[in-house]
Image 1: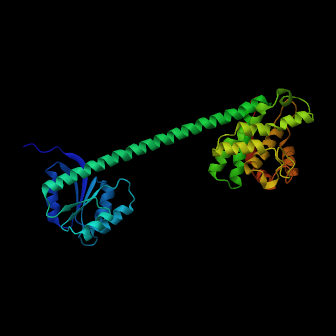
Image 2 (image 1 turned 180 degrees about the horizontal axis):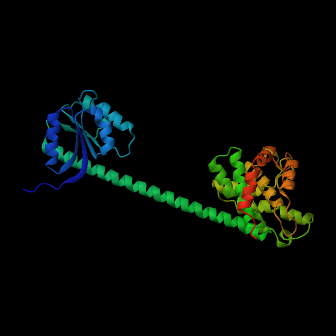
Image 3 (image 1 turned 120 degrees about the horizontal axis):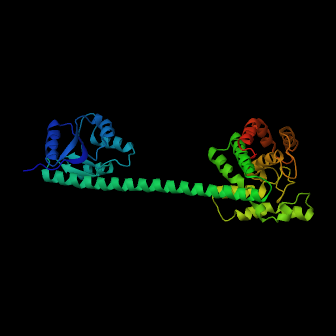
Length: 353
C-alpha cells in the first residue's frame, strides 16, 4: 500500500505526556503530516510558535508550569491576525470546562483517548479553514497595497495638476515658473521652522503654487499693463484673489482647502489694510500669512520687464519695516533666521539665463 503524499502544513502539538505526543505523531504521520513540532514543556510554546509559524495547534489543557488556558492567553496577546486554530486535547467534556476554553480562544476539541478517524477529520477541516483564512488575508493585503498604490498615483496626478495650474497663472503674468518653486519651498521652510508638522508643511509646499491662479481671470490689458494701474484697473486686479478662490472651490480635500485660503487671503495684511476682506492679525489663515512673506520677498528680488530686482538687503529691510503692518512679526523674525536657507532656495531655482 502506497504511503499518503506528504502534506505541507505545519502542526504544533503541545502535551506534557510523552506517550500522547508519540501517539499523535504516529497518527498524523500516517496521513502525510510530517512537519510536526512536538513540545512537552508549555513554557516553550511561544518561542516555537514564532520560529515555526504553524498552521494548526493541538494543545493539552492540564500541564505543569503553564496550563492550556494560560498558553492560549499568551498566544492571543501576540495579536497575530494569522494565529492558527487551536484544538484542545482533553478528557473533560463538561460545560463548565468547554465554555471557558472556547472563550479563551479554542476552536475545537479532541477527546482523549484519541479516536484516529475523528482526529484526522478535525485536523483536516481546520487546516482547510486556516488555508481559506490565509488566502483571504493575503487577498486583503494585496488589495490594500493596490489601494495605497492607486491613492499615491492619484495624489501624484493631483499635485502635477496643481503645479501646472500655478505655472499657467504665472505664465499669463510676467512671472516665471521658477517664482512659484522658490515661493513654495520658502513657504514650507518657514512652516517647518515655526513648528508645523512635516505633513502640514508638505501640504503648504503643494498648495502655495496656486496663490495667483485667479490671474487667469484678469484681463490682459490690466494684467500686462507696463505702467501704473488706475483705480478701476486696480479694482479689477484685486479680484484675482476672489477668482482664484472660486476656481479652487468645490473640493474639500485638505490640499484644495489650503490652496483656496492662500489664493483668497495672501494679499491681506497683518494690520487689516489688505484685500479682499481687510482681515487682520490671526484672522488671516496661517498659510496665507506665510505665503505673503515668501511671495513678496521673491517678487521684490526678481527682475521683471517693468522693474529691476531689489537687492537682498533692500528686500530684507522692507520686510523688517513692514513687520506688524503688512506681515506677521513672528514670521518676519523666522524669515530672518532662515535667510541663508532662503537664499539657497533662490540659488537652486534661479532664473534661466
